[in-house]
Image 1 (tube, rainbow, N blue to C red):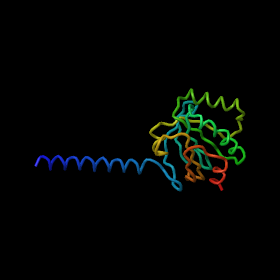
Image 2 (image 1 turned 180 degrees about the vertical axis):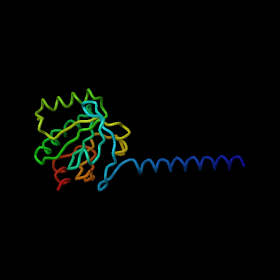
Image 3 (image 1 turned 45 degrees about the vertical axis):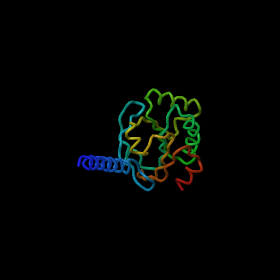
Image 4 (image 1 turned 90 degrees about the horizontal axis):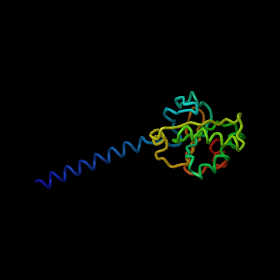
Length: 168
C-alpha cells in the first residue's frame, strides 16, 4: 500500500512539474506573425519607458546583445548600415549595466555612428528578455513591421540580406 501511495505521489509531482513547464514555455516567447507585449526598458538617461507600439509605431530592428559577446559586436555595423540605407529604427538592448551601455554607445560614435542615425540603446530586465526571446542567447534580433508585428526572429548573426528580406 505504501508503494502505491509513493508511486501516486511521484506521478502527481512529475505531471504537475510538466504542466508548469509547458505553461511557462508556451508563454515564454513570441513567434513570427505575432505582436509583442509591453515591457519596461531603461534608457541611457536612466528613465523607464514602456516598450509598445506607441513608442515604436513603424519598422524597428530590435537587437539583444551583450557587450562581452564578440559575435554581437561583429554584426552591429551591418545593422547600423542597413538602418541608414532603409531608414529603419534600431534599438540595441542588453541586460548589461547602464555604464557598459553608455560606453558601448560612445564606442559606436567613435566608429562613425552619427547623431542622425536612428539608433537608440536601452537596458532590459533578464526576465523580460527571456519572455521575449524564450532564452537568453545573444545575439538575437527581431525585425518588427508596423505596430510591432514580429516579422523575423533571428538567433545568431543577422546579415543585411536577412534584414532586407524581413522588410520586403
